[in-house]
Image 1 (tube, rainbow, N blue to C red):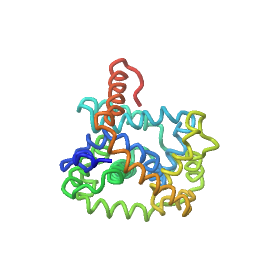
Image 2: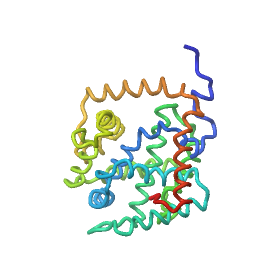
Image 3: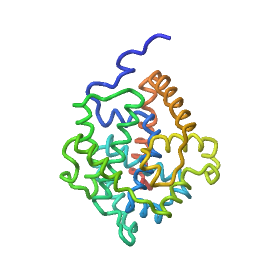
Image 4: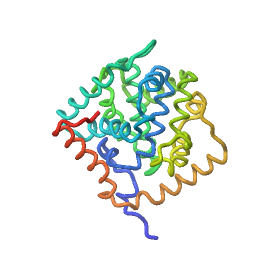
Length: 271
């Protein structure tokens, strides 16, 4: 088999947030981003007590991706519109000890989106150079600053963000309700019929992507055998994925943005 063209096999030298969002392979991290969010008590409680993901998993995925895509690929007007929608959706999400408008919790949610996207991209294409990584990190701030997070709340450099990430993981706390919710999300038994055939794979990838601290606090099992299967899967993905033409890989994000804009234009629900 001939070698891949360099521009297909390696990360571009000036990678942008849009470049990342056009890669459907990053979807392999969507479940682990959610799990990292659940591991912080205030976020986990809010999701476990207010989310409709169990009843409408695909719709919940669509609305989350709508925010992710618009913040990276949309116009400023579209970004402001979807931020208002998210703020409205957050109004009822509050309880004893938490609120969806807490900027510290929003910062963590935004951090998981940025960090998991980076990790998935590097798993497929290899390390991103430090200068580009710094720029990508700054680009990712929009996931928090579009809501209630102030720019100065973000660690100013990527190195300081890494320290923040480690500190947050050291502060994870176990909660039985959140653990039940996390396990239910990954349950092959309780999965909707249209998800059930791939639910074991989703569970493997999601749990494997997590740090040991996150798995422990969420009560998620992990074995040496599963680690071996996870490693083989990623070896296959790294071999096959870069051979998919870039224009093909960009189709899912383009279709998603077209649907979002149609919903906005026709007054249908986006978030």
